[in-house]
Length: 289
Image (cartoon, rainbow, N blue to C red; front, top):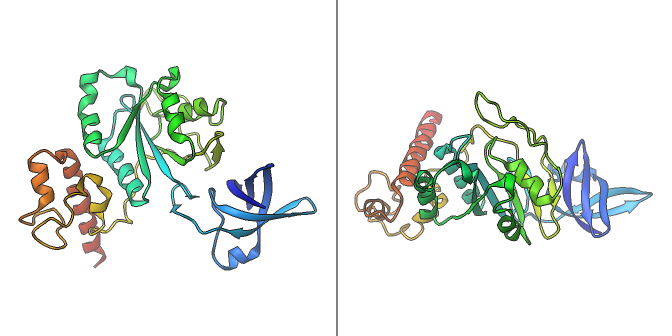
């Protein structure tokens, strides 16, 4: 019997099959092979004497580390336009992480009613210039939720973003029931008290969605200086067009990416973040040596 792992707690795995949910344990061979079942895994199970056992884990299309979830097809990156204020570096880190994992990205800007169109133009222009789709939300009022639902059909979607931006409200509204405690906003920091405690694949009828813990920072230690350019989709048309092979688009002459920044084709703030990240990667590598 085939199914999908939707939750794992304390060595037990809950498998979504056509008949419903089956509680299973994994065979010892997975532990011996250092293979741990993950939420999102496609598996083969058997049921004997009322007990389910995972016999096989099918090859994964991808594997995220934080959260630990497999076979994700897209990411819904949620940020509030205000309360809390947008941290552009953190937003760019989320986007880099998604690109590294080859996920389609949809950026959702929540709390649309708290900021004027003029105030939001700069951040919106930056994200649009990179080619990302944007959905504006007023999650508490349900504004934009139907558009999000349409994007979730047929996908396994990871819902990510910092605390306090309305992820739990969005998730509960999409699912039509209280799945995650929304938490109150601290008046001092105006940041959500993080309430999500585990990764769970939530069946929304025509797709799955998984919530992730709130982040205050996002580590990019996995990146190499040579691979960073591929995490900026707007660089795509210019990679390989520079004067020098292996150009890092930093201080090299004849760089096609820098020329695109100069003529305004590539957003300058995105390029500045690229350089900042590149310098961090090179600094870290120098310390290792």
